[in-house]
Length: 332
Length: 288
Image (cartoon, rainbow over all chains, first blue to last red; front, side, top):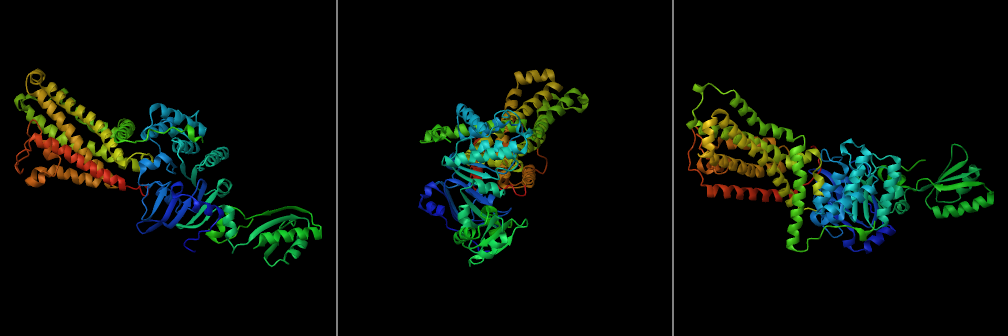
């Protein structure tokens, strides 16, 4: 695998134009745990919106987040969060909230007390603490359970308590390590909606997740990581478009797939055509989707085909991930 | 999110406001930590350590030895000095402080909860001070009760009438206050040492035991080495000197005006080093 394959996209161009003080910047950052690689030579610029870190266990996602928040110190390189070094916690955490994966709470604390404890440590007055706590609990829909002990909560509820704690002081940057873990589908949808609201309000959300279709759905940008390296970054579809060696796969639902297949091979960029097992569809792999769609229109008209639907089947994060990390194209 | 409705603490724009913010943060940290020190499961061992001599000496007062086996009242201050020095100061206060102060940081690493503090906009030095003061309050309170309680139980349990005179008109009240002062200084000094041990070592038990051995063999050490210990200064402050046996290397006790500020200065230096240590500290919880 190439050590670092950074794929330029339109959003990356936008990022470069912004001031470093309005960005989260990693410059050539490496982290080694003794001889073990955490991340290696990572350079990133993260703009407002939702940026998802995607990669298998051990790929370096949590290391990246812990470096950004000062829980770990880089072996090499430098990090700046909106112009603030992670070595300045007193300034950084006025602006940043981190919902980590560590599922631990002070013994005997209720959800409300837990959030209040740490707001008081921020230096908020009693009245400010009460107001901010209540607002945070409302945001994660935990008001009714707020005065129950956290130790009696389900995993999903504890996740929401941690999320409330991390957003309670109204940070500009929110770092979330696997924030959807343990949440039921309703809660997931609710929390994703909250993330979207926060991002639309101009916040920076950096989210790590294994749940690719949810990342795909909510992310503005993705950072794909593998073995401590960033293998791709940018907008999901932009990243997909740049992977030249992997043709796009398109499924055409129609009444005569054999006839369609025969004509599509007239296009030199058509790599493969495979009839669907139900014999009412055709999978086509092409390196030039724009040319392909023009040809398809022509063939459909000429052959008078009844076309039910045309859709790319691997233009999503899962496919990109599979191509880049495991070198296997998505097969639906 | 409506940024105009955000509530933020007053930014520390001047030196005074920084101090004001640090004070508020220290008090907030102390509030949480004192609760942990007194109400968590770990506090049970502390109660056991601090309460053990009170139970033992109450038993002794209720079931005293025969009169001919017991020291008479004029020698009794020597007996109490040995009980205080060997049992309370060198063992119970030592291990009680080790338990409380080593767990201030190490315990949170084991519980995987230290990151909440590290993710707050608080100077890490402020965190050291807040945690140290909370540990100090817990140990001073509990071992202060142990010190005062054990002396009163023993004296009044075994010699009620003589003790009334001893504490109201004699040297008793002065000795009691001196022992209490030694206990407080022990918590201050040992507290700082164990706090940095808990920060520095993943398994602080071994350095803790080495320290215990060093403090115990203090009476055998040459004069210069004696001074590199907490117990040497505490012994200088004891109201009744305790015999250290025939092999002890005798030195002049350190004057009070050097021992007390010396211990406080030593504590300040150790806390400063702890502040440097914690600024470099990383959290991964791996292998804890």
